[in-house]
Image (cartoon, rainbow, N blue to C red; front, side, top):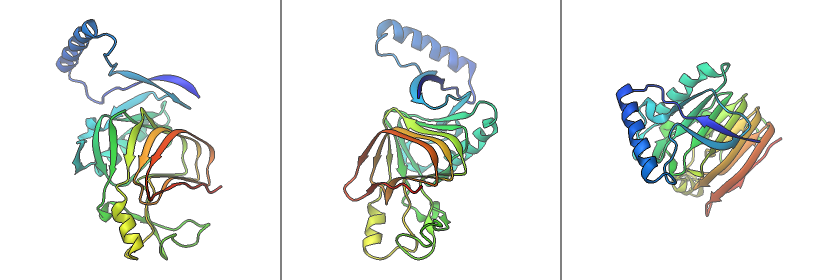
Amino acid sequence: MELWACPRIPQVVDIALALGLLLLLVYASGVESGKARNLDSFQYEAISCRAHSASVSDFGGVGDGITSNTKVFQDAINHLSQYSSDGGSQLYVPPGRWLTGSFNLISHFTLFLDWDAVLLSSQDENEWPVIDPLPSYGRGRDTEGGRYISLIFGTNLTDVVITGANGTIDGQGDLWWQKFRAGQLNYTRPYLIEIMFSSDIQISNLVLMNSPSWNVHPVYCRQLSTSSLVANCLTCSWMKFLS
C-alpha cells in the first residue's frame, strides 16, 4: 500500500466562509503551528486515492448520537457514485456520533472515519432490510429464512477502502444479543461490515465494538487486505471468512 495525501473537498463552498477559515488557519498556524490540523487534506495508507471527496455534513448529517443519518449516508454515497469512472470518490466522516442504519457501498470508493468519529448502529429494526441467506449456508445462522443486512454492506464491488484515523464503528449490539438468547429474533442478526463477491478491498485503522454478531464478514472475495483493526467486545464474534 502507498501513503496518499487525499483531499477533503466540500461539495459546496461559501467564498466568504472559506476566506474567514483561511485567515483563522493562518493565525492559528502562527500561534500553534505544531498543533494545527490540515482540514483540506490528510494522509492515510490506501490501495487507491480518490479524485473527489465530500463529508456527511455536506449532506445534512447530524453527529449528535440521536438523529438518524441513514438516508444521509445513502444519499451521499449515491451522489458520489457518479465519480466511479472519474477517479473515484471518498466520503469523510468527521468527529461526532453518527447514528445510522444500514447503507450500501459502491466501487472505487473510500469511507474514512476521523479519529473521534463514531458510527452508531441504529437499534430500529425498520432501518435494517432483510436479505437472502448466503448460498453456502442455505438458511440464516440464527433462524430459518433471511437475515438482516449488515451495517456497512457491499456486493459485486471493486476497489473499496473502509478506513480511518482509528475511528469507531459501534454496533450497539446488546439488544440484538438479548433477543438472540431469548429466541425472539425473526431473522439472523446483522454484522458490522460485510462485503460479498468483490475484489481489491481494504479494511483498516478502525475500532470495532459491540457488534450484533460478526465484526467483519468478507465472503466470496479476492484481494482483501485488513490491518490495524481493534475489536472491543465481550459477546460479539470477531471475523468470519468464506472463500
